[in-house]
Length: 370
Image (cartoon, rainbow, N blue to C red; front, side):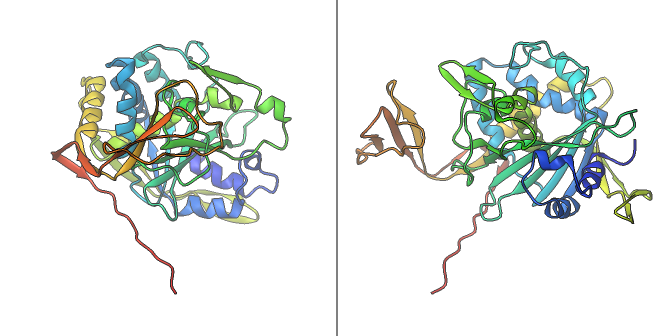
């Protein structure tokens, strides 16, 4: 195998007719510069497998009603270690462990999870929003490798997962329902997580790309057909980022001496950091994962004052139509004049145990010049 996953993605951006344009609308030169500037982490087999523990074991240990609380606590802690971050992992090691620890062993279509026909690696490009530092976007890349008889080029999935680490709406126009597939809890839709679709693939008819109907309880909607195949990626990323500072790891910086030729120039493979799980060989990694997620959930963090939305009936305003709120009562409750939606004002407060650490959020205050 030549280079890492990110090397293959960078090399693909240099091709005149790159397949990346099928899933991305962004300029390839800008994407290449972003990839070069990112802090790069490669998870080895042990860390890739442990990520399956983090993403599944804590959810399997509780009732379905409590799983959204775990997801929300992970969202609060899933801040980026750097402005732009790249993480790639071994899909086979991850999937084998996921099959062992998954509560159901099934994908969202009810099919058994398998370890066949997997890409070599999956890569995540994380970027903070330029104006809202608590908001994060994640673009996923599928890398099949370049050592087979008919190597496949890296592919970018035509959407980005987005979330806000504080209880405020994400600063993107996004699809909150498809986010239920992205994180895998198909009964839980959060206004603070979503999916930004990057437009239809110009080389595929629209009905082939958006034909699949996804049903969750009473909700039915149309989503991208690949969303089911790559369901759960948002949960995997949130669990890993929320516990990254506590995972026992060993790090090794790699500065490759080799490279490749593209567009008539010799280009070196990029430097990166390899993360390995650093626990005794006989340690039960499932117990380690439960402890880390519990620690992330209990750590103190501040919560801004915000409106909590809920409903007391069957009707809601049509999608895209804003609610018309009545004046709040003495208890802080307010109802929509046109439907059964309500909202309650939650005062600014602190959640969690400060003795376990404090997650801080910094806010930039700006104003227009006169």
